[in-house]
Length: 209
Image (cartoon, rainbow, N blue to C red; front, top):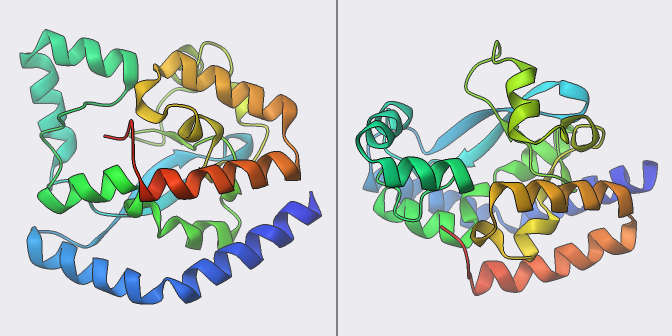
């Protein structure tokens, strides 16, 4: 969709230019408040199964994956919460500033660079996170209840339909169903509606953790 790509380039370029002072400020704050680099790249599956790296402001402590494994093994309730939502309301991996970045979604601002590169769109299903390139696609299909092929048929986005319909209060299954619905009904006007609904959610976060 040429029109969508043109919109993505214009929108992301504007966001990067206007938001540059905020980017520099957040880089400084993250660097001063916790050990480690201010930016973090996360391995994701993009359109058609292509592996991409999505950039974020670092919101977690170093060696966060090892800490998560340890926490989940030691607490069955947290394991159940992770299985249902793939999120933790009280995530021990988050830094103090990281909690704020996550709640406001400011940690995802660097992904406008991914949009400019063409890996992401402004609006689309959220890119599927994986731990390693060799992670089996069958595991991903099982996690998404066989919705993977449809979700991967379009370019993933910075914001998505479920982020405007309950965010992390929705179960993983509910989020996957909404993303499938987006693919079936996507249009420029739906994208614009999602963008407009995203703005107040960022300013007045609810259901984010």
